Length: 70
Image 1: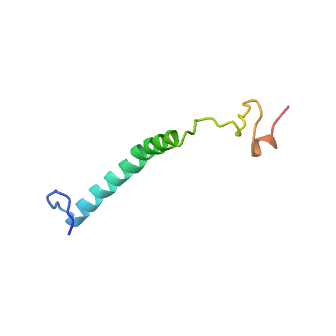
Image 2: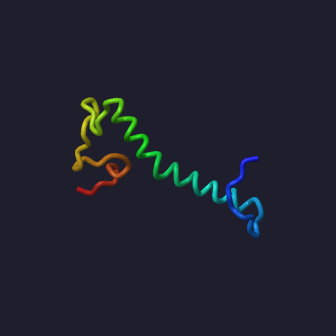
Image 3: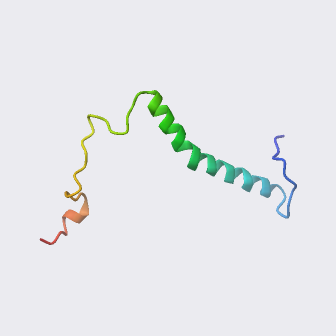
């Protein structure tokens, strides 16, 4: 069975499970966005596409429009 090269601590196998979860969270949070960016650049996509209109910062969106004081 696969085992991380760690000594079993006070929690037994749970120590290795927690380390594996921490490594998985690191990979998803930090390497995932970089991989996504690299793949989108390989596909030729840019950060801003021609068909996506830019948001105008002076126009509010959502529930804040309902309660705006003028």
